[in-house]
Image (cartoon, rainbow, N blue to C red; front, top):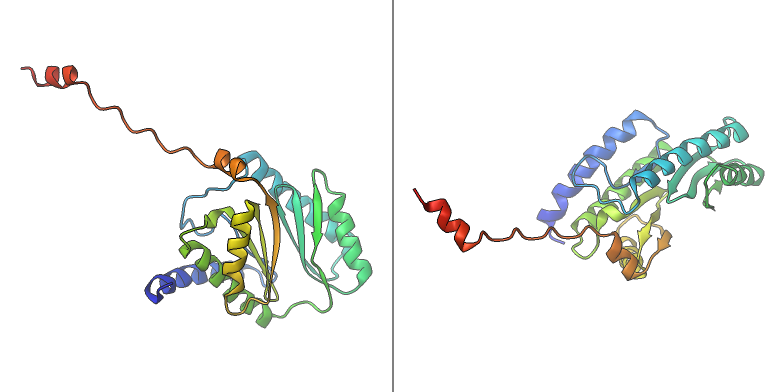
Length: 224
């Protein structure tokens, strides 16, 4: 990747993420398909599923807050009804309670519990995650052999979680790209794997070329 290509991309994503981070010190660093309006969204979920995932995220988050009160720092992410939990909680019991609350949420198909038992992450750690998230998304955007919008990226303590409906080929390629980025401690694939045929059915069909005007029509258009 050339420096001239990578640098403007990083700066653009850094600005967008810095603005998001300034809204809340506890905001999870999630990069999905529609950040900053820099490109047209090509989410492989239906619009109905995207809405359902947002509802799951809100409901599961509320359930977890009811279960843990103000203990810990739990982020909830949902993709195609799969819930990913990241962050920190003070005890193993709290970790289990958070997962149970998410599992009991309506329409959740499964829970990936990546909560760490320990102290809440620091502002410094979250700032570092901000930089890593920026570099990950810039790398995916600049890559020519992957569709960056197909991936949701979550960063916690240098661990990069990748979500989306992708083929085995796409999953391996993106994990390979992300693993080479400075600051990435671990890459965790939380994908729903689909076949190449399923992918082909999900991709938008190319527009049909316009039919050329018939010779008769062309001639008639030139008559006085």
